[in-house]
Image 1: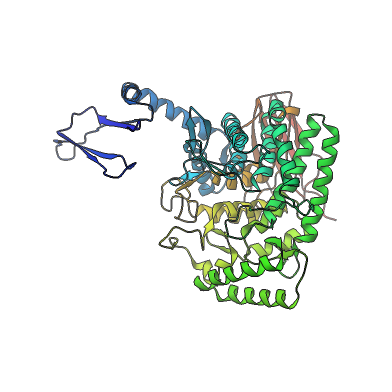
Image 2: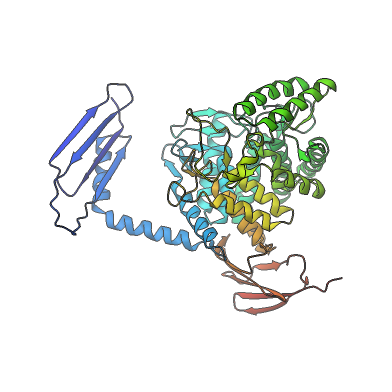
Length: 586
């Protein structure tokens, strides 16, 4: 017998009800209620329906139904209050009303993903309707955005859930990829998810100032990094092998995103070890980070394509992937991609190598991760970002660049997916957000804003108040990591907020788009503090006004290029006003 039950009804008694049993095992049943209404012309009648569910039993079901029916007004009022608090936290006001509206709704969306299973824990789901359970990488991206909008406790709970399930599944520090809400793990973890966990812990510490996080999770971090260097790095070159974010069959050698996130993880592990006074480990991790940075810029770079390579692998691996990619490009009728792949195949065949080497085959979005993390050399980054701009349409960045052609710039309508669900040909919000972050990291907020505007074209395209996973209207109708793609470019980069709650220090490095002369960010939570930033730019000066609730915290404001580095500063209570004059041109 099933212990899954649902109960629904209203205050008005129905005239009939019908329950239809499904003959197939596990398919449950369906039910309907019929009502008879008498309404005068132009009149209205409100009927409130209540729906309750239980996986425990009928008694629990009836108790829940009774509770929501009895307390419905109080529950609705509490929900309204919660959403008002969400709206007022990290409240964004810019000259772009669409950006303001999108960001507000992404904060609301973030509340939709909370999944609590008492027997397992609380964490954020990845996307609705198909992925209402927990994922490693989805959480690791999304929670960096959640921190920026004050969701500290939810972030900590999700981290605890990922850590607990990963330990139960893996004994080596590996972070699990896909976890059902019944506790079943479908994928023990892609390689990128373990280093991204390290960076999530460090960023959570910076926002919350909670040192116990570092103490609690450092053993898992240490194990995970050891797993990367031992089991996942067969040739001992510091670049772990295995699948990253790209779900393309055969892409399991040395992936650029895995390398970028691992380099960032070593940087962050160095910082964590330093805080915990594990000085010898800190030195080792810093050395690994430095060495891997050099390898990424030397060994992954392709001067022929002005891009970082999709992967480093053997000729045999590359040739098989080329054959598959040619079929894909030909099916999508992308002759330029077919020709490029054929030429690459000819070059490999004519110039064979016995050693693994970098290959640019798919122009996958992950080639932009060195700019996302900031590991890319300045000159290479600017060339790679320019290359990446080719693989876009009006909604954002293609998951796989060879899926694009010149007609893409005119693709303003609904996404034409295949009959069987597939991400082939997709433009997605995460790749677009990663490109925006990369543009900001290398000094081009105008390009970053352009990517945000492209993503914003999907807002309410199909579901009001939401941005689809695949732009503009395919895949999941709501996706958790969308908050990452907006919050990092806006809060961390345009406003330049760099928190260090443990040190009671907040640094602000504003780098606004040129058309944003006036913008504000209100009620941003940093540890026990709450700060608001007002940005005002005139023809001759820049005024940054910072208000905080903790009077003794240190605020450091560093202006963008073109302004004097030493401001005049006025303090009134908890408000500080920094005025920077235009620098004299040489």
